[in-house]
Image (tube, rainbow, N blue to C red):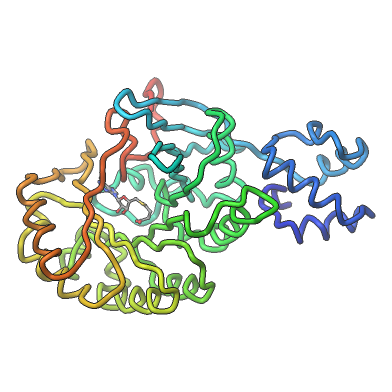
Length: 345
Ligand code: SAH
């Protein structure tokens, strides 16, 4: 049985019709779930008691329970460890920017992708999150902080395109005008490059920002640090990206984690510029965040500047990602499962 927060308004209408309810009931229930963000059928005060009981008997309503919360002393970034209904643990991060709050959500418990520099894969893959569970991360954080987020990044644990159907359902739900009603333009989805799914997403023609974790301009190097590259190589990936940008007219954002002495040479910068020439895109350089178990370090600020200058000289727009929440391990690639007893996350 589907959890009720994963159901679209149309599906809810059909379910309520089967329970001999008028159509407007679905909108009321949907609003309780996605606007008031409540977690009990009892709280739905304009719904008849009997119907509440019927819904409760038929549909699970799962929440995210806050198991741990850390607030950065440096920039007020908040990192949550949430427990799902079956005991799975996931992490989400809320960041405050001038334009509002951004939440970084996880789409899977664990990850299969095994990127060499990323902490999320260290605990292995556990399971996909449902659309309702991904929404649950946002609602739990909003309820806890008393805020409404305006931007969402699918950049937490997991590979969104490896959980394609649930992620697409999540995107439709969170942008529904009868629900949270976030603009698709305020959502970024980050992928390590599962090419067939990029084409599937392209066919949806959504106005979201596609971020692609590139991290290297050469197949040999990229395959070493990102095993997914052995299946979908750089040229195939960039071809899909070009088509994506052309079809949607949305600029692709390439993520490039600077791994000192590994992928930050002048030669890499020149090769990257050549590969991206003429594409509607920009490059986001991220000094790699250190993860205890991995050997990578961020390299020197001078080399970061040289790398960035080479890209710019070749006509590529570059930004360097600001680090938020660095005192609470809330930066990119640091979200992970920590099960060990007594180990505070
Ligand atoms: N699976 C998706 C979503 C993860 S998003 C993807 O690969 O894009 C997290 C982003 O942080 C990705 O760009 C990822 O490559 C990057 N990342 C992972 N570990 C990192 C680290 N230690 N330092 C900096 N960036 C990292």
